Length: 149
Image (cartoon, rainbow, N blue to C red; front, side, top):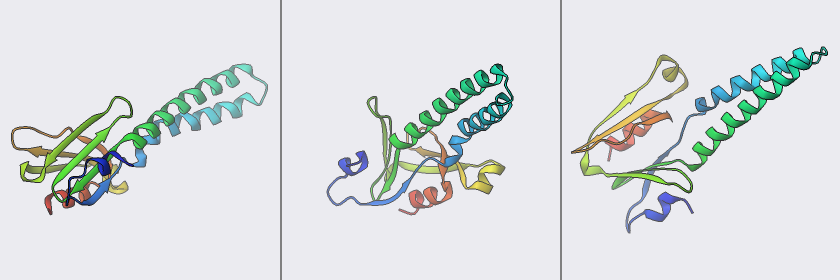
């Protein structure tokens, strides 16, 4: 059972869930492509390129697994009463804000973010702010569900 489902209050329902966009995997995927290119050079007999390909492959594996773990342990939900954000597995960081405390929701998208439909969402509340949610898939949809309650 997920964290969000565990902390729901009686009568509270989940209206929308959001997640991290696949663009977060690009650094690891880029290292994997360069590792494949180096491996192609290494097949011609050069041990140097095989070692470079192996090292780049390890970096790619590290970056991809780290981003996957971040995606797997991050939960973003909008209920009929509050916004819930949870990240982390053993060391957990949670932020919750009741809907009546939300003042505004800012969406920041680059040109590539507009094309691929990802961006940063910042929820501003009375007295405090929500930590920025970065590289969120469909940020306008998340904003509409927050402001539409």
